[in-house]
Length: 263
Image (cartoon, rainbow, N blue to C red):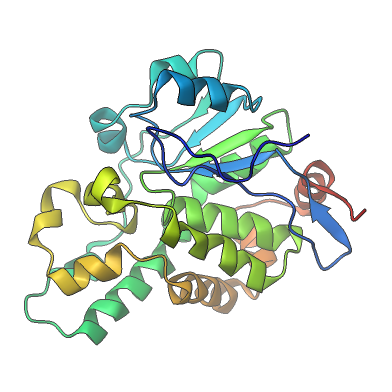
């Protein structure tokens, strides 16, 4: 018996399973092994009990150090967990970020800035993605991947993993878009959009149109990111090999760990 795919948590949001998707090779992503979420700083005791009941033993936190310090994951959840987190200061280049702050820009210009931001996320977090995927081939499962909203950085990390497993692009996009209906920005607050490269202290300076676009889980954002990866590396698999340095044996190990035959 598997847990529900989407968990209704008192103090958490966008907490859901990534499993059950069929693949082009005739398999299916195993249930209960990959989870994704928004930040985990406001969980109730009951939330923590529910999450720990999933058997998760690894948490990959894609947030920057400042985000983790501002909204630290509940320590009760971390007890006995392996935590993947990074202290490097690397961040998204300022050019597309600055475009979001341009006063008086058109909606089309702000939209283009969002596409440009998404094209940079995988490159910016390449070292983190490599470590997550490597750990999955070892003993890191079940694993929870999260950032602040579970939208941008988590969205890219999960999308690339599903692509590497052979999940249909339409299902990959649908998994990403589902965040649109699962995040209450009033509760989470707009600071969680920092995954797109926008600093927490500057969120209030955004034009309302830019802010609205920033908080969306628009399919075209992910499509732009994937198209850019394919242009640069020939395919998502090319990105795994050329940029992440993951060879065929690692890709095969990912499939062995995460796929099962269709019933």
